[in-house]
Image (tube, rainbow, N blue to C red):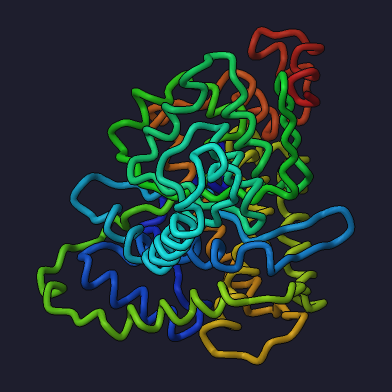
Length: 407
């Protein structure tokens, strides 16, 4: 494990997700719902960012060279059944759910006189799905270029459903591919070929800590990048339940959140997100710090995989923060939004939170013994300059140690 992570484990302060960089109206909405639901603010913030990214759809994009990002999250709320994981997801996605009902009602009316097979050919626009086979989900994505959020109250059923019908299927590979990758996806089957232009997949749900170890220990999802793709929203160690929340009036928060989401849904023209020079320099320094740590072998293994995904999420979180400010502060329409220094600094502080929560998940799954022999070699060799002496000390050949360090 990296020296930096070991130092973090010794910190006395509870791990918390900051709200400071979000627009004041959004902070008020999150604080109100957290009190009303008697849950941590983290549980409301996660679904809020997912809802905002879905509402923004494909109308807001950042691009630099070959890299392109739309607002997209794979979000997991980690906690037992007492802390309103489901409730927080539902209230923040409520405006989208209501829009889905209107769209479905309109589609039903338009296809009422059609035969079933004819009606099936008429695209149905939607924003959320709760359950779907991979083929059905891909069909919906092909009909909805703004992307679709896969909302599942219990994420274990999502993970368990991957390759449910075919152990050698491509379900998991599809979700791996669709994170941070917006190239066209083509699926070819006998008698059918389907091309999804720029699929934008989003996932949100809850999961209990007690199921992590029995389900994921030994799972390929640790190694293949599936779990590192998720942002983990955790209950702070000092969180206290407060029954006074039952008296909180949520009407103003509900109205404000609905207005924010609908402004994004109503966006007609594509908006480009652009980094201010200073903001981009700060982000680039963040990546350089990761590269230096990897070169010194103080960042490796699962933590390095986490940090690689957080380099993508740092851009997406800053984008979504800026998009929320555009909607919450009722800024005039423009074809460009500037991500400034404050946006990226806030985003990077959030990435520190997600690095800690991801490593907590890793420790739960591995019982705190997640280092494999190769990771141990990388960690110890960073403290010993002479590789030959080090190899002799651990009873391995110099060639083996060199292969581990360079592989």
